[in-house]
Image (tube, rainbow, N blue to C red; front, side, top):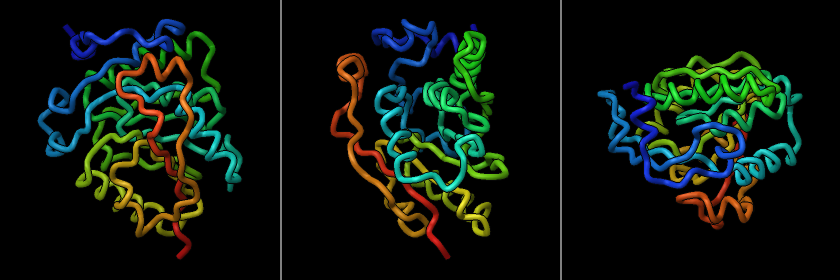
Length: 228
């Protein structure tokens, strides 16, 4: 049995998003079950898919502050993408590319299967790519980048990711922006990023009822790299 099939076995009702599209992006998996023998296993926050309505509202807020570049020039980069729900949704919007990075091979396997199904159904306006690696070892794209977090990991890893951003974007900070939902490690970003929007993204009734951990009070934050 593949890692992906083993991680599908969860007693959580299927989310309407998956019923509609035939994908597997739901479930609730604690971080303690997602370790792969990596030094960052202890800092995995666990997996749950972002509520689709909450994600779409967050991206709308990001667009509403006024984009520095054309959306088709941005790479969407979801660090800790899990089964890839946010990547699928992002691919509808016409980004240059929608990329998910996931440390757990089983989740990455599921995300790739979801991406193939989504693309095959003609729902993706952007190419989708799933990388199985640690978020601190990501290959940063050239050109504008929107980094997305849905509370994927604890402070130690977030600090390492921000340090990697600093090294990569120090001379091209105008090309880096962040959307962070359920921002439990927001303090880590304060030195390098300017907070340009924060608030609550309204969830649909469907998501409020169906999502295993969705909270209508969850905060979303949008950041830009601080001018030097």
